[in-house]
Amino acid sequence: MKPLWIAILFLQCQLSFAWFAEPRLFPADRLAKSLLEAIKEKPKDAENFYRLGRVYYLAFHNQSYLVPAYWDSDNEKPEFTDAWRDEGFERWARWNEASQNILPQMNLESEDELSESQKDQFYVTVRKSADSLKEVGWEPERIDAQLALDFAEKAVKSFEYAIQLNVDNGLYRLGLASVQEEAADFLQKNSTSTLNIPRNLSSITKDQIYNNYLQAFVLSEPEDRKLDGIPPGGLEAIVSAEAARACLRLGPQTNEEQRRFSDHIKKLESIKSWSITPILITPPNLPNLSPALAPDTHVSFDIEGFGREAKWPWVKPETGILVWDPLEEGKIESGRQLFGNYTWQIFWRDGFEPLQRLDDDSNGALEGNELEGLAIWRDRNGDGISDRTEVEPVRSIGVKAIHVDGIEGVDSILCRRGGVLLDSGEELDLWDWMVEPLALLHQTDKFTHNVK
Image (cartoon, rainbow, N blue to C red; front, side):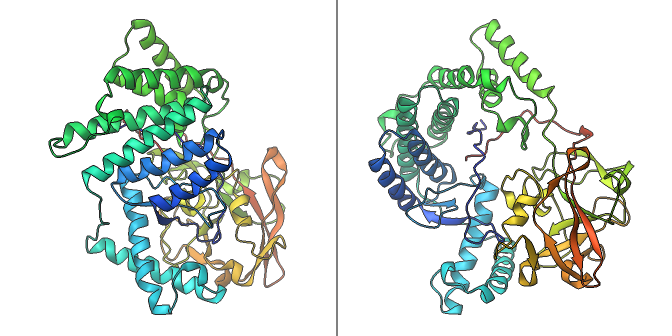
C-alpha cells in the first residue's frame, strides 16, 4: 500500500547561502529541541506543534535520525523542503556525506565557516563528490524499526496537539491521518513480536484513519473551492484534493460521500494551473513577448520542475532562457534550473524573486561574482533538450550586469527593459514568461505529498 502524505504549505525559505539553496541534514532531536523551546515560550502556537510533527514524521518515513531542513540558528524555526521523499532524502544525504568529507580537508568544521571566496569551489567539489557516491551505490544509514516507531508515536502526538489548539485546520488533520496510515502499514510489514508498539499506534483503525482524512476534507473544502488556479505541484498541493483522494482510495462509507469527493476532484481538475514563469532574455524594445515565442513549437521539457509529463509552448531559437548551471555542464533538465516558480526546488512568486536572493550587496543588480552560476540557454534546434553548445555562462558572452527587479508591463507580464547590460554597452530585456501546459501526457492516480 502506497502511503498518502501531507499536502504542502509553501513557505519561503530564508537561506544563508541563497544562491546554493540546498538543505542540510540535522539530527531530529536537535530540530525537535529548538521547536520544543519555542513551544515552551508559546504553548498555544499550533504551528510549532505542527512543525514538530513534521520533524518526527520525516525521521519516521526516511527511517533516519537525520532530517533535511533549512535552519540557520536555534533562534529560527526550521523550514523543510520536499526532500522527505526517498529519492530526495537520499540526494541530500549524499550531499551531507560529501560535505562532511570535504570540510576537514579545508580545515573547517562547518559550512558556516566558509569565506565568500571558498564557497564556489566548495559547492562544485561537493556536488561532484555526491555524484560519485551515487555512482558507487552509497546509501545513508537507517535507524531500526523500534526507533522509527518511536518517531511515529511522537509525530502522532504532535499533530494531535496542533489539532487541539486549532481544530479548524485541515492540514493538521491531514498530517495526522497520513502518519497514522503509514504507521499502520509499517506494522503490517514488520514483525511486531520484538517491537514495543506505542499505544497510540497499536490502536489505529482504518475507520479512524478514514475519519481523519474526511475531517481534513470537510475543513479545507470550502476555501479550496474558491481557488481560481491550481498552484505549482498540481492537486498534490491542495489539502482537500489529497484528502478526497485518500477517502476514495480507502473506500467511501456512503454513495453520497463518493459523489462528493469525485465531484470536488473533477471541479479542481477543471481549474487552470497557475502559470509557470521562467525568465527570458530578448532583444530590446519588443512590443510584447510574442515575437520571442514559437507558437508552432511544442516540447516535453519539464518547465514546472515536478516531473509531470506534459507538452509545453516553447521559445524561438534566438530567445535566451536564464538558467542556473554552476558546474557549467550545459545540462538543463527541468524548471528547477530555470529562474521561475520552482528554482532550486523552492517556491517563488515569480522568476525575479530567486534572482534577488543572489544580490549579495542588495544594489538591485547582479554584478561580478554574483553572476557566477548563471547561464543563458538558447535552444537553437527547438527540441527542448539542452547541450553544451546551447548553454553559455553569462560572463563568457559579455554580460556585465543583470537587474533583479521586474516591473509589471505589457499584458500584465513582469519585465525589465534594459535588464541585461553587456560589456559592449548594449542592453537586452528581461521577461517573466507566463506559460501554461498545452496538455498533460499522463495523469497518475498515485498521489504523493510534499511535507512542508
